[in-house]
Amino acid sequence: MGSMDRLIRTIIAVAIAVLFFTNVISGTLGVVLLALAGIFLLTSLVSFCPLYTLVGLSTCPVAEKKA
Image 1: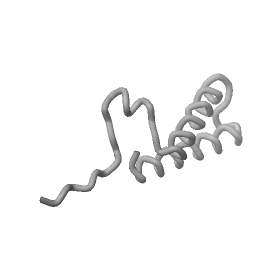
Image 2 (image 1 turned 120 degrees about the vertical axis):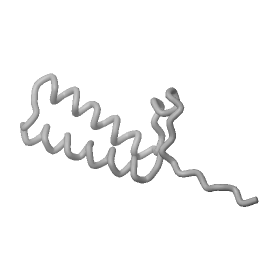
Image 3 (image 1 turned 30 degrees about the vertical axis):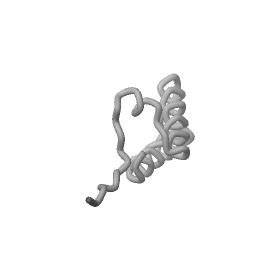
Image 4 (image 1 turned 90 degrees about the horizontal axis):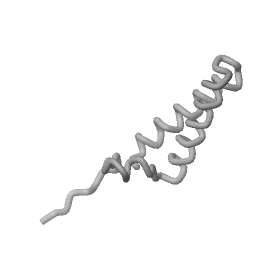
């Protein structure tokens, strides 16, 4: 997972948490989004997203080999 992807996930997670705890979002939608924010934060901290592996996506830059 690339550093920009990690940063975006962290920002989204923090924004959702702030909206939830200030009661801007609540109820079932709030709980679902809060769980999603937790997953975003966790995958950002460990730099690995299992869903990316399933779909074959990578946001990590790969250094080119010099010949």
